[in-house]
Amino acid sequence: MTAESTVPSPGGQPREYGYSPVSVIPPRGADGGFRFPAVQRPAGRRAGWPPLVAVDTVAALAAGQVLAGRLHPSFVAGLLVGVVVLNARASLYRPPPVPALLDDAPALCGRIAVTWCALAALVAAVAPGAVLSAPALALGCAVQSAIGLLGRGAVHWRSRRALGLRPAAALVIGPAATAQRVAAAFLRHPGCGIRPVGVVADQPAGVEGLPVLTTGEEVQRALIQNGVRSVLLVEPASGRAPMLRALAEAGCELWEVDADSPSYERAGRHTLAGFSCRRLCMTPPRASAGKRLLDVAVSGALLLLVGPLLLVCAVVLRLNDGPGVVFRQERIGKDGRPFTLLKFRTHRPVDAHEAATRWSVAGERRMSPFCHFLRRTSLDELLQLWNVLRGDMSLVGPRPERPYFVTQFSQTYPGYAARHRMRTGITGLAQVHGLRGDTSIEDRCRFDNAYIDNWSLWQDVCILLRTAVALVRPTGS
Image (cartoon, rainbow, N blue to C red; front, side, top):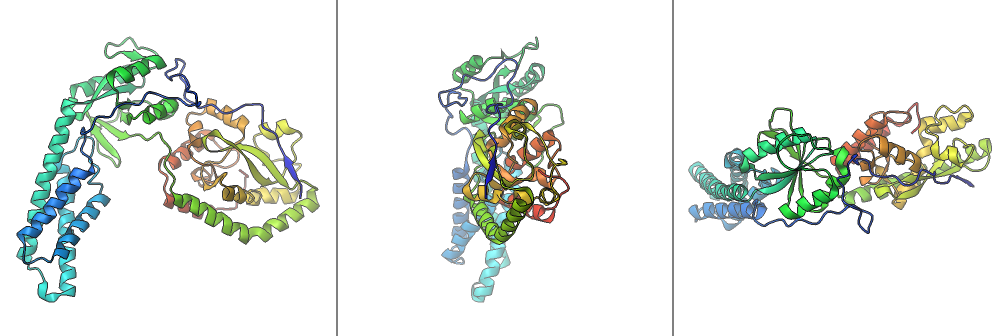
């Protein structure tokens, strides 16, 4: 079978969206990416998991020592492993920005009690003669809880003291007036461990306060001179995506600050200086090897399963519409790299320019009934399983687009370029929400970036199942 090809559009390579009228991005490095100098992150500012695991270990051993003679060594080992595993699953070894003992106490004591009860029940079932009495069980729980809370309180006290004595220098990014207000609030509450030293804005607002940085050189100078290690963002992240990624790569911790809403605890959010904040990750999630294994397994199995159907479609298309049944087109994939996408040809462009720049042919009257059928049932997309098997695409991810439209959309829609942080896909979160064909690009950006920010292998499975249920659509993609 022959193939019809298109050439790249003259639109050029896409550029990242998010440049301000006044540049706050440092010059490009030799590798073509933005770079800030790496910051030195001092040790010991915030306790990590080793001290907390050590505290739980000491507490378990102490409880076993108090009940020496009544507990088998394997019971103490199971006690230690059980508590550590339960605490890890509850994120008790990832302390919040400003750790507090009372916040951890209910979860810690509850998991200790559950572990003791589970092990006591196991012992009673296996060796009834060695069953623990209720007073012994209560004593063990109380001793381990008390020592664990005292030790954890000491670790948190040391962390809070370090935060107050050595707060991290920070930049506040956003409209100058709002950024100055947020910076002033953080300066009035040094206990949160963040000390703003400058504001990054497009233009000074004439408001007194911290220096306003409007150029890449000023940002770089502040980063070096003040040892900036934190960034507070008080505007949508999409408008500053290139700079934020460069700051994250330099070692800065990014925080998204809700400057206008009342502060309250929500999942993934913390309260700093009275503001509701959440950590912001600008680096793409590391898709696990499981995602690639899922792609290879499913795409390989489907190619074998639907191989006869693909052959029938190719033969019918060749008989009805002549040669050129496979349509090859350049699309933009992960990190802006182009690749050749495969589809069944359902429309013959007038020329290469039309192929590269015409948005949709879903309503094309020149299509034969069989071509309309292929587009309506999405059977024309099945050849992309070969792109998935090759590694050009994934089963689930943002849909790839032509270079011409990537350039246009990156300049028009905030966050569009950020979709290329992850490998593009046959289907995605936007598609299962009906965003296929001639639908809102702004909505697609929002769903695609939400998918990337919250990626998990289970989410991929759910999207694939939803795609299988709603496979037939009235419009093509």
